[in-house]
Image (cartoon, rainbow, N blue to C red; front, top):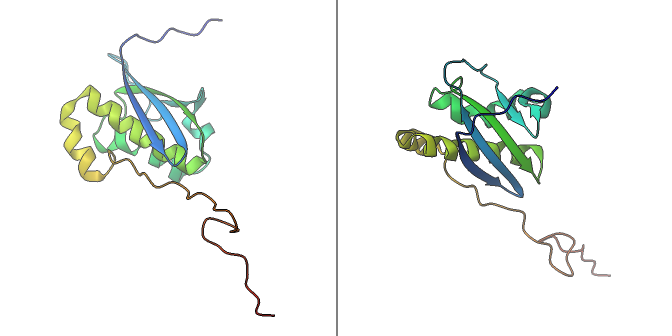
Length: 141
């Protein structure tokens, strides 16, 4: 059986965190109420993708903060990094897509810090060291 075709109207946002990249699409669902957890990540439901409730809430907090949880069907393609970085990348992508949808969401999302890209990444390993800054143990004799 063929899947139902999505409506063509969507709002796009890209979120990044550490080495994770999330491409988010918000589909407006007119007339029908979507369930609050109507987020699919890499073709799986959000509850299947994130086992921890904390990560599920991080991913969907931008929708909840502006009160549009049931107004959208969200599809996400995310790759790279770990599950925490992926959840935070999804949060940024959803927030950016919400701003494209309605410019009035920008101030509340900015005040909560959901539109700020966290640019911290892992520092590279240097030659002669065990990690980025950890030197081999030194012995006098």
